[in-house]
Amino acid sequence: MIETTIQKYSKFESWIFASRLKTLPAAIVPVLIGSSIALYDHKFKLLATLVALTCALLIQIGTNFVNDLYDYLSGTDKEDRVGPLRVLASGLISVKEMKIGIILIFALTFLFGLYLVYISTWITLLIGIMSILAGIAYTAGPYPLAYNGLGDIFVFVFFGFVGTVGTYYVQAVDITPLVLWASIPVGALITNILVVNNYRDIEEDASAGKITLAVKLGKRLTRIQYLTFTIVSYLILFVVYFTYKQSLFVFLPLLSLPLAIRLVRMIYKYKGTELNKTLALTAILSAVYGLLFAFGISI
Image 1 (cartoon, rainbow, N blue to C red):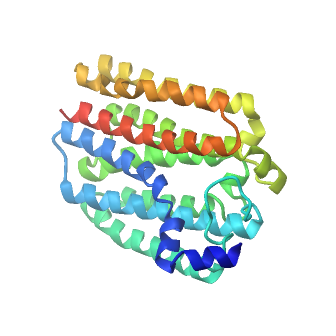
Image 2: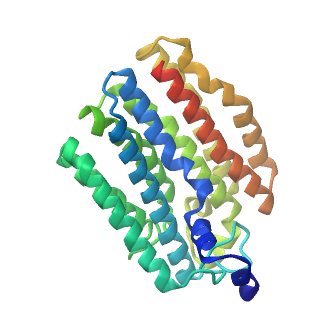
Image 3: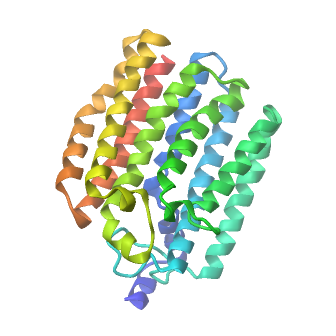
């Protein structure tokens, strides 16, 4: 099996697999929302947005690399896993190569981030260092977050609050109530991607000693968590409308509601590998909602 997989993919393709391209919208959406609010507040800076986006993508890729490495070293990832292919478990990339890749990715992140520090304040440096360390601590270190039921909190905080507010901050050097409220649906919908992933892998993770929040909550409460995050994401639109921007364009994300309803039905109905489709569509919902919300805020 491993030899067949190695022969099938080139090293370049293997690194693309390791980057997990389908997860990258989770890094793009917070930057998009934060920048749209900066544009609304007449504080938008194109170069700062592009650099922030680059850093966000690199941190996401670096986190994926660390996740692949330590899930493999811990024995969580095996050849017969239910989820998508993992490059170490499949023998496509060696442990040594992955460690070098992790160092290079986070080093690049730090270098690009120095520009954001230069145009803002030392707080940006602190945010950047915390984001890199959190990306590593997600599955590495003495107390890996993903293995101790804290992965959902990590995703909500860093993809929602830190990603959205941080992007706005490097442009405006300020934080407003609007950007704080806007970070909630961003974090909730991106966290739902992880919720589906962990819901699908409950039995597999539990047997491998990976105690995710889904393992702790069980299937029924994990489904309720997914539903709650979905509902909250759409309710926030009304808070934004009645409190900060009374424009009907704020409600553009409601166009994605049929997909959200479909996904809730899927997570209550699907099992095993069927949930891979739910996972992919949840990522699409996050991206579509984010695009519509950003457009509605900026115009």
